[in-house]
Image 1 (cartoon, one colour):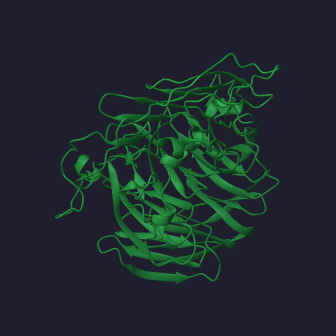
Image 2: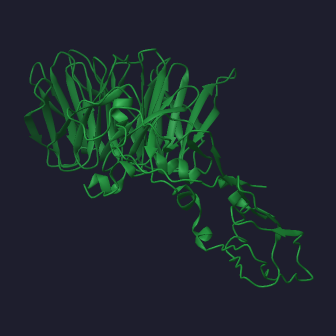
Length: 502
């Protein structure tokens, strides 16, 4: 039976001093003066927290039951110290009230029926399962049989001597506590510190935002840091490629391509941008400007491996150019096999290429022979992202899952673990923290980037943006960059230096 346990308050606490500064508690407040208190409260407060994070939210007193109860529970259950008339066909088994606690078992269908109490004599129906009714003015308890799926959303509320802690098992409540306040994003939140949602563009420890670069007016689809340069390069669907000075954060150069840039990478001194029916290439040292023709439709993905430039196109074909000193780029192969556009490419060990497509499949290719070796069918929607990490292949999909693939003794790949989200996965990116723990960044369609420790998939934190994050790049000295759908390029920094996985 799903149980909700609450404790009736015997007194109300009202703040006589400003609320404690949450940034001061974390040792990160830099405001002087600060409008919040830099001391611990002297009286108990109602602190709401999620058991899996250290991020806390203050709420108004006596509001826990109203916030947690479902919409159906809003129907009043009135009780007086007199006898009550019980409606027919009621599933009520027992009513017992104690001053210490209230125990409520909810079923999704039965709770919606109002339970009305009136100061009349108790009339017991013949077909009613009620055993006993006892009511005191201090508290009440209701138990309803046959819980259904609502049992999965049960909430346990326990009160200690000094503070009332709320551990929410309900999935919706967990997600809500880790969501950014939409009103705060538009400077319209009136709840201030009492708001139950986040008033920050991220939560989690060990990193912070460093700068915001906003010159693009459409989605940023690629970010690159060319070798031997102090410039950051970004490409966007607004048809431009911009160069940013890493010291000042200013845009110092812009190239108009007259076509949406749907992918962008760098390899050595070369910058590659995927556009319609071509790949544009620039050498930052020599100033060379090359156009690589051949692809049909928009070039949606780019990668370089084994001295080969690879481009996944809208026609479902992967185009390959070999780089050499005599002829900088020479097309050496076209890899056909996907029935729909190729949206992601990853280079693995043993000169293997992995391609993800809108046809829901992942194909494995040998870069020596340019032949396909196997097809992986582990997703039911578009395969949006692929990364290779050590001996594992990770794949993200619009089917809201992240699959971890491992090589078997027979030489095939099989899914060893699936992590399920509630929202479509747009991109996967990886780096390690200062303790060399692998951190997986997972961009999702709800405008967030979730950070997971591997292999446990324990959530480390989240980044929030106004639109989906479409690009990610790791920089030196603990820097990393995200580009979102509004054209905003965010610069983030680990508070301690992070390492890029090799």
